[in-house]
Length: 339
Ligand SMILES: Cc1cc2nc3c(=O)[nH]c(=O)nc-3n(C[C@H](O)[C@H](O)[C@H](O)COP(=O)(O)OP(=O)(O)OC[C@H]3O[C@@H](n4cnc5c(N)ncnc54)[C@H](O)[C@@H]3O)c2cc1C
Image 1: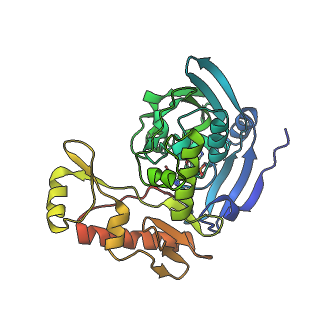
Image 2: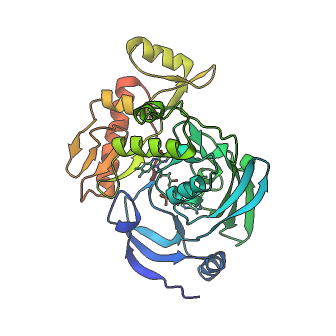
Image 3: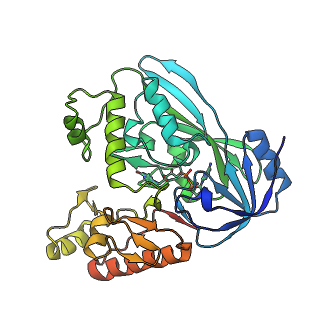
């Protein structure tokens, strides 16, 4: 095993915000055996797990051993009438994995095309886009217990998925390293879902009335490219905030004052409100404070124009939260992991 621990290692190219922050120690691991050795040899060190760095805001140097999970490989583990079980190692790039499933004519992930990051991180916040979430196709994942170095299987129920939530952001946080994920995908009778956002409009533009998996994926890619900044060109971490879910009673009071506010009924007692709308109404869309700012087309996306520090972006996020709270009485919570 050729494993090198780097010291005082710059993470600028390892986070999509492009923030300059240093890891006290850094190692990339390429197999479960390597991972076990690293954990055994560094039992008493603080550890920090890094995937693609597309869902974190680094506000300080990381005083820990940063373990970059780079386990590669994917395989079909089971086939049945109309369905296939595919296992991917944690370090595979998510979008490349989605494109691979589409090339095999496996359905279920196409609406989540072009989400940055790695496969192993997808259960952490139950990623989702365009009417689909990972939990819809997720079967199980394997994760290494950081303390005991034992592999444990988490079923869908055990993951306790919610809206951008799972056990890995709650009780199991910092205790497990996800090493692989299994998805159950369709091989026939695909459940093509074009009802969300502008997918239908995008397909109509290309005169497509019976879309294939690839057509849906291409439509999602085109829409995302037109709306979201590419982190390679403008540092960002996607949606910075979650869409708040508030009680129906609270919603009715706010809605009476702002009847134009869009909303989505979650249950008999809860309503979801788009955080982007609240932020835009609070006057932040397109604003810039030094090198930190709010994207001109997407109020939900905070951006780094070049040399913003994590602290500067955090300060903007706090300003937004305080203003939205005082103007609408709604508390908005960060989706991005603030480190
Ligand atoms: C332009 C853009 C668009 C985005 N759009 C979406 C979207 O539509 N929907 C959506 O849900 N998300 C979206 N995101 C957020 C992000 O892409 C996802 O959350 C993604 O799953 C993060 O993966 P990552 O590997 O980059 O995670 P990282 O940022 O590396 O890590 C995120 C968290 O998970 C932990 N972690 C990382 N790897 C592991 C592991 N193997 N085991 C246990 N814990 C681990 C880290 O410690 C950290 O706390 C977007 C981001 C960007 C930049």
